[in-house]
Image (cartoon, rainbow, N blue to C red; front, side, top):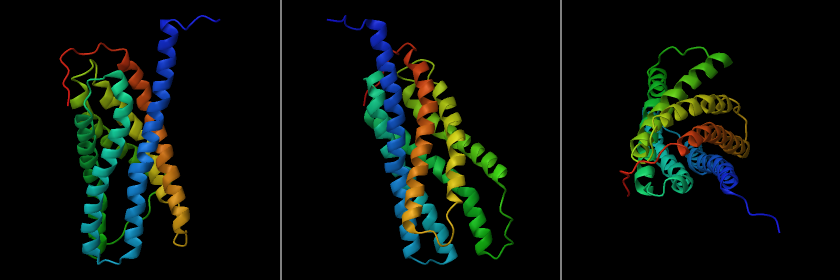
Length: 237
C-alpha cells in the first residue's frame, strides 16, 4: 500500500484545488450574475421603445439593479471558496461588501455614458467612434478604477481576518483592468441584424471568459494571502 501524502503534499493539493475553485466561482458567478442580468436588460430594451430621457433613467436604474444582483451572486460564489481559508469570514458581510462595491462601481461607470446619452438626446453633435487601441486603453483604465472600488469594499471585511489584506485591492484593480477590455470589445461586435440567440451566446461566453481572467489574477494574490498570518481579532456575521 502506498504511503499517504505528507503535510506539504496535502497543502500543495489543497492550494491547486483552491485556485481552480476560485476561478470557477468567479467565472460561474459572472455568467449567472452579470450575464443573466444583462440578457434580461437587453430583452426588455428590445421589447420596449422609450423616449431618450426615459431611456437614460431606465438604463441608470437597470445599472443599479444589475450591480446589486451581480454583487450578490459573485459574492456568494466567492464566499463558498474563501470560507475554506478563513472560516470566520461571515457570508452576510462578504456578500454585502461585494454588492455595495459593485453598485458603486456600476453607477460611477454609468456617468460617462449617461452624459453622452444626454448630449445625444439634447441634439448634441456625436463624436467619432474610437479605435480599437483607444477602446482597450480606456476600458482597461475603467476596469482598474472599478476594481479599486470593488477591492476596497471587500478589503474592509477581509482585513479583519488576514494580514496584508491590502493586496486584495491591487488584485482587483489588475484583474478588472485585464478583463474589462474583453467585455468592451465583445459589446461592439454584434451588428444591427445579429440575432438575439447569437448576442446571448456571445454575452455569456464573454462574461465567462472575463470571470475566468479575473479569477486567475485574483487567485494568484489569494495564494499570497493564504500564506499570511490569520488575525486573531476576527469578526463573524
